[in-house]
Image (cartoon, rainbow, N blue to C red; front, top):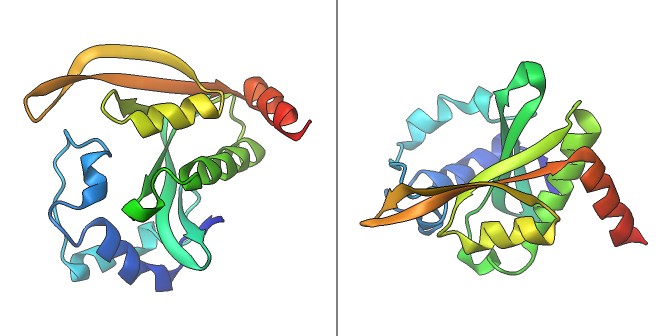
Length: 176
């Protein structure tokens, strides 16, 4: 399930996301951007930006918090939104949890916001994120070649997108 973040989630979210200098999940989530560990006290100073927000929710499996889904406005006046997902526990990677969480998140976004399109950006080294987009019927809208440098290797930046009508068709086919 996905749900808004609660105050009691914060200690675990801190531990999973920013306690460590080099967490395993960061190797796949835009590793070309610097990641810094944040002391717990500093993290808790931001709690009002985490709890009960519309754009940042928890992913829960059997009562365990395993990740988050989020969105940000690329350009709010034109309803251009980009979303994201992080599953912190490697034991939950490649098990369908990300696909299910993104399905719920996309459904929620289209139901609650006046969106025409939802999209996300990843990099060519993150095959799981490209694959989940393909499984959910996303279109690769852009491939910016060799613009992400990571560990001495250039990767492509990948933009995936889905229009509301495409999502509705995809969901109808799934149910049918």
